[in-house]
Length: 454
Ligand code: ARG
Image 1 (spheres, rainbow, N blue to C red):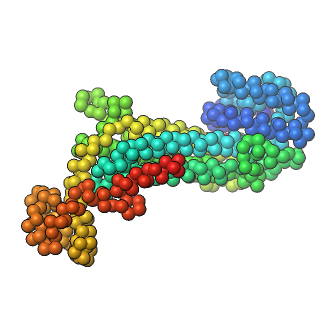
Image 2 (spheres, rainbow, N blue to C red):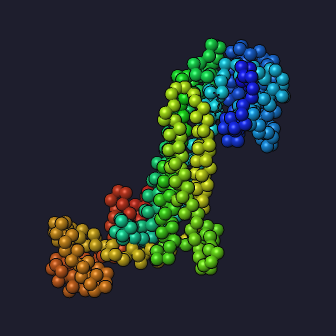
Image 3 (cartoon, helix red, strand yellow):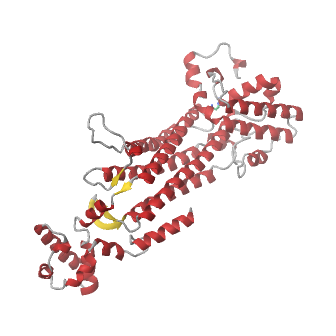
């Protein structure tokens, strides 16, 4: 392919470090699509004659059939997917194959192929995220009024509804979807026709190839076109953020499944046992989602570091972009599938959640708020009075509601028996009706709004 000016062939290790076919073979569909668009345009502009175009298109169609049937034969001497396609084309149609590369370089070719692939990966990530969102919406709907403890510092803070807690992840995943959508829109310009770096002297039609490949138009600067891997970094950054969110959800499932919590039980299909402890039911899938989020976060870092020192235009360093992106894609897809499966099938133990929600004096804020509302006590003073009530209850080993009327009045005369209406966890969550608050009706409205936006 470039042997003309060389005397001897490459060292074996040179060949090994240079070859990318083991990784970039995944681009074969995109490579064929790009070649088809390119050669069709070369025909339409009169750069190639119709006979060559027809022969090349027929050859590409044969290759598509062969590769789809698993017929791609890897040869490290052919370096990458682009040379594999071109070499096979030459075997099929003879010297006319050599005309396909007119007004094109592997530099704009790979940039085009990879953009097409990453654009598809954005759509795939969106579909995976949407499936998880749907599972969360279903479970949130079942548990719009199920009470659980809300935490700060992992200490019981205030009662919330499980539906509200799950809807917090719907918000995060919705932002993740918009990040992939933004990335897909931003990358949707075609580098094809930028050639090696400077553009070409052939009278090509970059608008035609862009349209044929479903791009909004051609990229505007040939140097940028072959050097830019922002689009891959945008994808990796969106994947890293999604991984971070999945990891937080995974962490919660792990905590909730532990015996002291007992908030959830994972079904057999999403649990693993221990080879020594017969009683064990471990949340390995959630733990591995938590672990794999690390690789997703590292993926962005890896490619950013590959790119950060590269002068314009193309350098071979950029060939290593694909392994990072493919790995992130596979990891994200698996994590989303696992998380959706767990979310759809785990059992929420409402009794355990409710009991935990009532622990830790979780309605103390409600008592303070009641004093402000009903007795016009300044909040800071109400906070202090409530703190003394908590201290008294703690000393007696009872909940706030377990203190007698006399005990409450002894702490502050303004605490009357009417306060009991706000001391229960049900009253507490029902009162949180501010927009975005945890009250069951709010949760139902949030679920309906989220479904509308899907
Ligand atoms: N395989 C290369 C890559 O993935 C594309 C080829 C560009 N090669 C070159 N020598 N300019 O980046």
